[in-house]
Length: 597
Image 1 (tube, rainbow, N blue to C red):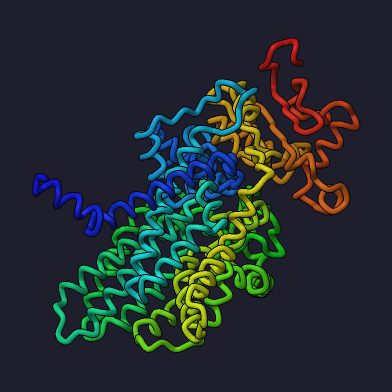
Image 2 (spheres, one colour; image 1 turned 180 degrees about the horizontal axis):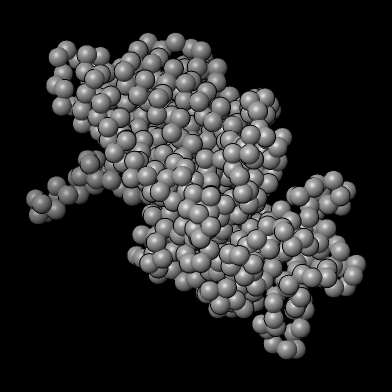
């Protein structure tokens, strides 16, 4: 036999080739599972944040700059307040003041690279929206990278069995698979935080050496600062993690803490400053409308009232809130998070091992220090999530960008797996295979939610009501590029319909001094109104009658149905057939075939 061929066969049978074959088999298995999951469980986006980021990314990809077609009245008011009467941003492309730039920019890169097809050609056979499928596959590729990163981190901190259990449990997490198809940047942020912790582990190890070169610490500080900036420019609220990371660097870097901290802080400030300057130049605020999240869901601004309002005096509006309002919001939300979200972080039984595992001291000092870092990070994210809660959490309670605790989940899987093996090692098995069976049973228990999800019946592939992409797109096509709609789901009109759409104001246009007419008469004509089940399903007593400004459009619909016509004086009177009673579309003129009126 040829010596080279014999050596190659030996490698395949006993050498490096065996490991490579195993890795290829694992990756092929993951790819097959990903395909199977998407065929059974994929749904079109249900999160407003996902549609919002996607439509901003498309605007970037199509050369419209960092602009949005999803127009919040609060954003209009911010621009007008800072830039004067003519600066409301409705005369042309409306600058986006809600989204941090990294994730939409990544999506824009995908949209210019991959063959995105936004038009729905066959509405009757529609099941999945192709652009959303591509975005989901991209996030699932990030999920695979996250699994590799978690394995490396777990193996570095503990050993191979812990690393494999952590990866299998994370890979079988129904929560993370659902996030992977949600269109949200959650998987991307979890990956960034995992890389930050990997670099902190390197920094801790170097900090224990005698006389380590300062250049190493400077380099790691620069890398950590770059990753922190990326995280903050993906989700603004993660800026509160910066003091935790910098403080941890000061603790573990030893005599070289100064170059590490300086590199981290300087790079972080250099990367985020241009974007914050851009926001300030447009609106007079560093974080745009996102900076008002702390004031939402308070007693003065319940639900989405603040974002849908068009205040002429911001200071007067915000002065309605005292410290007690923020304190009340913090206490109520903290109670909910501690009772509901904290015990089931990661959506796995491993969280039951992680929380008590925080109390167990490790022999490795690095693990003890990292444990306190995780405690500090969880505390900060708990407070941030509680104070930063908005109406988006009510729309999609678990799968939303405000769910910050899920970002810590990879570390829960790592430390939970470590505690499981620590307890397992205390058991003496009379029958040796029992140990392996117990581990397999535990993995099956952790993956039970995903297994049950994949069992029949199959999920309906549409997030309806209210999102039915073919209907939204066909309805939007009645409008021209330069015309403005108003809707109770402007994020969906902007994404599926690719038309400018302002969120329904807190009045229904019955008063000539209302916000509806302020926009229609002085900024840009509103030429269509599109109301969906979000409004049509409004509760009569609690929301229409007693809901105040939140229920005005529900009362408008009820009044229109009782009168069999829109209220007198309302400028939009033409309606096509086939929308009521589930939805309502009103226009300034007939835009459809005459037979459809």
